[in-house]
Image 1 (spheres, rainbow, N blue to C red):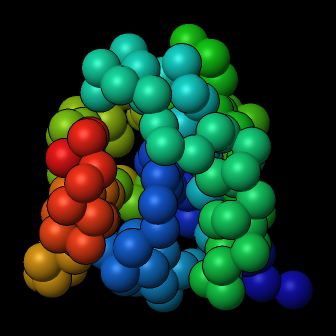
Image 2 (tube, rainbow, N blue to C red):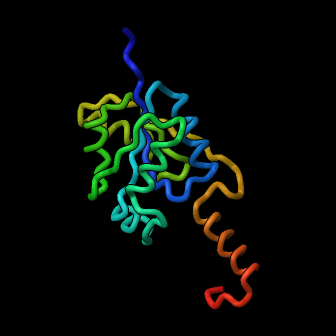
Length: 153
């Protein structure tokens, strides 16, 4: 029996948009099983300087329901990616175009830890609404255009 190829990805996945779907589909094509690590709220605050719109458990539930995803797990509070990689033991890690890790450096660091994992980068999905910040801006713009008396606009 042939071993299933496990692919691991990670991200915030706040307000799912076409870029997320593209990323997850491309990652799933790399193997048989796609495991998604959802960033903890505390990690998002540390890295992005803001709270996510949706809490971590809701983001996990939404991602788990997506067709390409076999399993979603919450990351660790301290954001230690190596700990989760050691637990999941993926064959491949797929990085998003906007994730600041260097694939070769990550492969080297994983190798030092006795983990033989291929690291690849998924290309960008080009669409004007393929970013959470853009979607939030569009929502605010539309609400303000339709509610001229709204004091928050």
